[in-house]
Length: 185
Image (tube, rainbow, N blue to C red):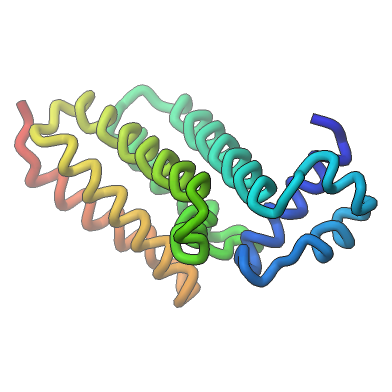
């Protein structure tokens, strides 16, 4: 990826993350990326294409970051806790404005790529959690993994709305209680 293409992509991610997809236009992205209109369209033929590429890149970055944090521990329980720790660090960043995938589902209901990428991202997280639960020998790990991912999605929305830095701790408390009552095979 060229430097100009990367500049456009990362500026678009920043703007879409902060302001949403509908309220950010191509002209603003071009202006803030400091590229010519021809350069923009050379790399991104349309706003839909740019949104798709932004979501793909955001998904890649999040997966890479979470997986990297999981390498720090071998115990699946602590790896699951590390996912929550990753979310807490994300929530405490100045550029936390909620989840770009949740925003895409809300703002772009007829954009097929964004729906598929968002679903893939959430499924990846669910699968990652399910694998850890399986390593813990938790019975019905699929159902519990979905429940845990739902708690994470709810924590994202809570933190975005209230900004009280409590969401992820409260969500983890629920997960810890669920795990203490889970059936182990």
